[in-house]
Image (tube, rainbow, N blue to C red; front, side, top):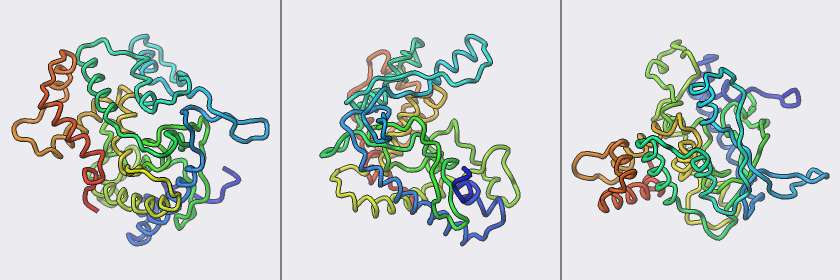
Length: 328
């Protein structure tokens, strides 16, 4: 940090609330920050691989290959607290061998901790089904380097929003392109993870500081996702990598599926949100099936073919550019 001159992006992003910046000034800062971040993230395209895993370095500091990927084992930590009554909060990690299958990135933690409870098992089966429908990009290596913690605390910017530095690269890895370097920044997708999203309308009232962190409204997040997508398209076009998939919009869905698979605390909230969007995109007649309804159907192997077709159609719509459009 002493080598980077600037301020945490959080302070600039919420500057209108933290230091009284004008509405026009903070919008300009946000736009400038997103533009410079998109430009930086696109540069990671040059580091693509046929195999996913943690990046290894040679003695000269250059990338030398792919090794096992280490991830936080959220289920083991929950068991330590609530089953074994151990208050220790040190992270527990699990390593996964390198793989050429992008789907393994999503399902690896589900394989480590198979669910035993009937409803939880059905939820995991539904999650696996959705993951199996993710379309992978063609005509390019399936894995690419991406920032391991693409969130607001790791970006240092000038007072005007120009990017000065990106920190916290430890455990950087080659991940599937569907959750790779072109995805939305984490602070623009918080509304899709209800367990973590703390927005309240009172935050729009001047001076009503939250107990935790400031949040943007769903409408505001939708707007800035559109802004970032346009910027990523501008810079991504220069990479000349062919794909029939929008690798900025689509990870709004795929990254949240990965979070749901890796973190049981977030699983139900994310799938509730996703199902509501799926049913809305299909405009089906009749009552919508709830997450427990579908979970029971999956665990009993009784999912009606029409239900499965509707689920697939709605999920495909979410993955498409049209299904993720939303208001600007």
